[in-house]
Length: 187
Image (cartoon, rainbow, N blue to C red):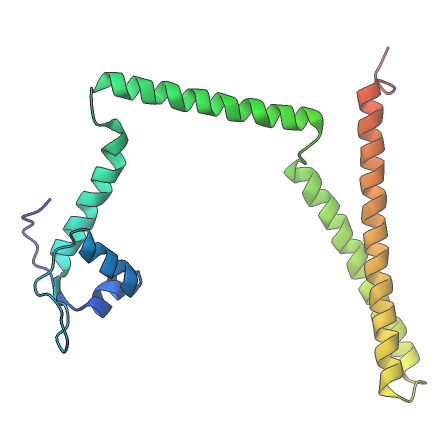
């Protein structure tokens, strides 16, 4: 990739960092590992980089990094790497299956359903709290009393949502226990 026919722009460290979307310490790290530059910076003089050369260097490093695990004895390494990855994937799949069987994980669909119901109960409670506060605030004369009423009603809404969530979890656990004992299975 070096020897590119594209002429790059001359950039300083700040411009290079901005162009590449990285921080100045990242550019400093690149310099330490061989990033090409036109002129070394020093006191009173900025670093100068050729944008095309830096981009070519970064692309070359990305390619080298991507194929680093495959260097060596050709097909043998590729097959060994594929077998290793397959074994890792099989182990992960087995762990997930065991966690599901033991009830250590919750399906995304179940979690979404429970959280949707929690939010609905909370929204209803907060809507009711607003109505109660509005109705009673007309007869209350001090701000601290209104604030106490608001806290009480909001806490009531949150407690109601929490209790509903706890009941749903308890029902789900008892259903799981029943399913595990075979009591709801056909004979």
